[in-house]
Image (tube, rainbow, N blue to C red; front, top):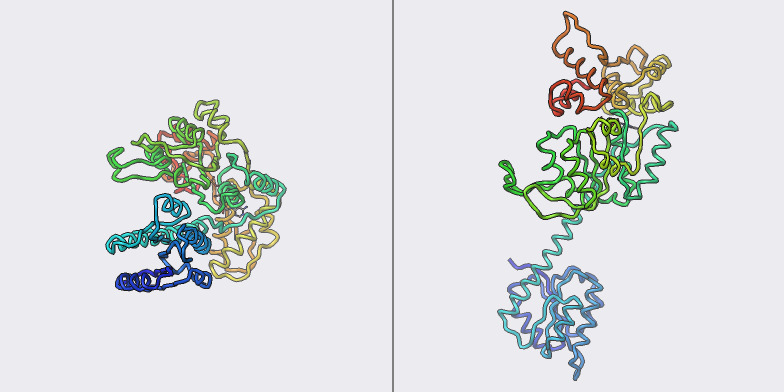
Length: 454
Ligand SMILES: Nc1ncnc2c1ncn2[C@@H]1O[C@H](COP(=O)(O)OP(=O)(O)OP(=O)(O)O)[C@@H](O)[C@H]1O
């Protein structure tokens, strides 16, 4: 199949005819110009794949300067086009100058047909590759914007929230490492997304890693990657999250779950700005902005020897503390309204409202599960209620077992839920310590927390 559009510019008409004859069985369209000025009248130069350009046009002048001039003009008009210079008066110096100006290759007249065809073919392939790269870059850009799209805006107008947003905006433009702390469900991940959106890296990718859901044995490979054969299951090379986030932002959620051995490795990566895949000894430079989040008290973990102090100081250049929902006066009802609209649209329930008694019930509740709990409460209520005005009795809060009571009618699930809840409270949200006390791995504990919606 013939493909490719080629433009040939030479003042010698017999050269043009000879080349046209030679190339017509290979290329889809061949355009010939005997005067280089005709280039300026072309509207769609970028549609051409190749230009074969003579170097001398005026009689008696064979310096090649005219060709170099037109090469420059063509490159200005269409930087990615492949231009092959052709001349009867070539020397090495002229060839080097042409290549420096952006020519893809240089051919001497009289040409060898086979050689000329091969030169044009490789220049055509180069042009195709450049087109492909451009297309891939374009695809990557649109994929990134889809991935980064923050579908959820931050709702609320309490002073606490507005202060946080102010700080977030201020630090977003810097590359400072940010540590976001707060109870579960307070919106830490949402703040991290906002930080990325307001940063200079917003067109690059935001890679989120939930450290609570990765098993300990996979941490290193997940974060830093591995090469094929590094261990039994490493059947192919794997890119780690650090490398994937190159030029963008890396969000490490539940950083308190990182085992001590890997804390040292994480620190080294942050300090050296390069990662080494498992099984390799080749450092790969990484340029990332790091955001970490946790519901643990990392200072306390440092005192208990569970978290490295030097790592803590590396990751918390800026510290953002997200307050619990009960301490954000004014946000509860605004958020409740927001979720009410969201779920009434989702479930096709029409216009719903919350009556005074229900508003009081919602503001008096202490929301141990914070915004996530409020969101689930409203969703449940929208699904179950038959009325357009929701009353206090429509809102049912999920019991959070605080004290473990041995009763005869307690099921194993309730006992387990209660024990986990107690252990988490006792260790103030430190999952590693709670898992330790319960004699399960952190992964198992995490799975159960999700299962019981704790
Ligand atoms: N201000 C807010 N406006 C709207 N939605 C919010 C707000 N804050 C949190 N949410 C929603 O509440 C839920 C929990 O938020 P998010 O996951 O950001 O909390 P988190 O603190 O990171 O939780 P965890 O510690 O469990 O990871 C999400 O669905 C989020 O979209």
